[in-house]
Image (cartoon, one colour):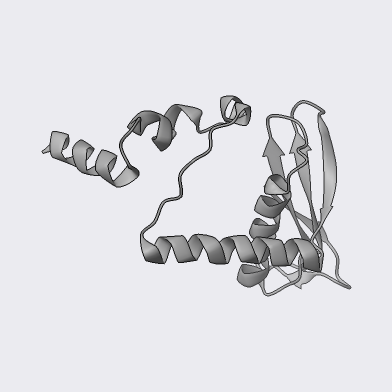
Amino acid sequence: MVEFHRDEKNGVEIPKLGGKYTVLPIEYKRGSPKEEDWDRAQLCAQALCLEDMLCCEVKEGYLFYGETRRRSAVVFDSELRQKTENMTEEMHKYYRQKYTPKVKRTKACNACSLRNICLPVICGALTASQYIEETLRDEL
């Protein structure tokens, strides 16, 4: 979700809303905060997209966790931005190489919102490309 807070002094012009606003991305998660930077990096990637789309700087956002029912602030500092950009570059490299990294299933998979459509689970021993080819062949 994205919140727009009216800020005529420091905000960015949002024509459809009339006036200037600061942009605040918020990501809702079912579970609880994690030690790893996965959630913060996802939110930072969303902020980078908003910056590109709205020609503004997004300094912070929030993660809302269902278990704690609280928002936690995430500051998009240079370290988090660099980590997020590095992950994005790695994903683009894999895409160009037509390579899908092997998934390491963990207990976190049980709480994932995509667990019912997770390709590594659906595919079994097949690679993603083998699964897709087999599925398309069955459809024809």
